[in-house]
Length: 375
Image 1 (cartoon, rainbow, N blue to C red):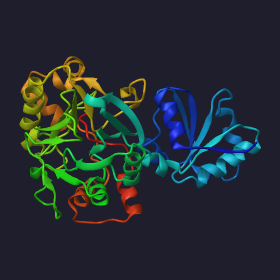
Image 2: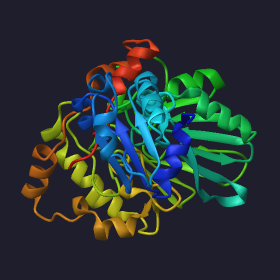
Image 3: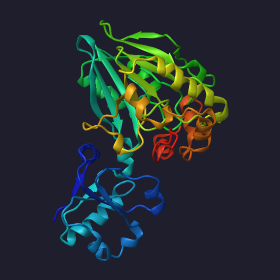
Image 4: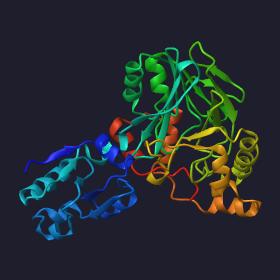
């Protein structure tokens, strides 16, 4: 049987539509345990590649006969070798094109809403990393929010939509992934915006993004309004788009809230986080549709693969928004934290412009799931 490649887009569609699939991951156990392809109806077998060099006979009875089987490795080569051996045994099997490297960089655009006068907003789901970026489109212009380093994906999408990127914004100085904002702004001659309280160490020019800023996109009434919302970082800023959407950055997620410790200031920023969530956000309309900058697990995906929920529903269901006792809240957001993101200090320095790692180093820096939320 011929071995076929399955590309990240095809795997993403299986995640979105909750299809069944069996994944044979041939990376080392520690790599598999740290980060794998997540799907609600996926099953897994992890057998390191070096254990299969002499043949696959020992695992044949562990493989299903009624599901797609996808072999996964870091960069493709090992999975393709194992898939060839399985094919020789008569098993229909796929390998992941580009491996986990490609999975970690894939962006899937999903339309999440209509705006006034024909405008649109798209969410770019970085399915392998849990990052969410946004493009607001109106009257031939576009704004990007929290763009990742896959610059060409955003630029090409704008070309396909026949719109000019005029503004690029980051809700905060990111610590879990490398921002593509500044590179996109340079490539498209757009304005790059960053909260000044997060930019005290940056070594490049930017437009200061401050509370009350209004950025008009296109010739219509669509606007992006900045709402100062510290807590994840001291400069964290949310955006209200078209009085309909709340882009919450890393302050509020679907099932959790932002962690305040990635700049080493957890105790200092606990009160900022609480004031943002329990006061600033509480004053907003509960009909706003929250669009966060990250998601944690595939369960948070809607039926179309997007990630969103109304602010009112989050105030009812999100545990992080319903802790009355201040000491309990403080304990949760300072003690109940996952491991810090890989290379987060170097990622922050990269986003400040202090270091300029090559593309292979950037990939290594970003390996692993996002870890921006309180557990």
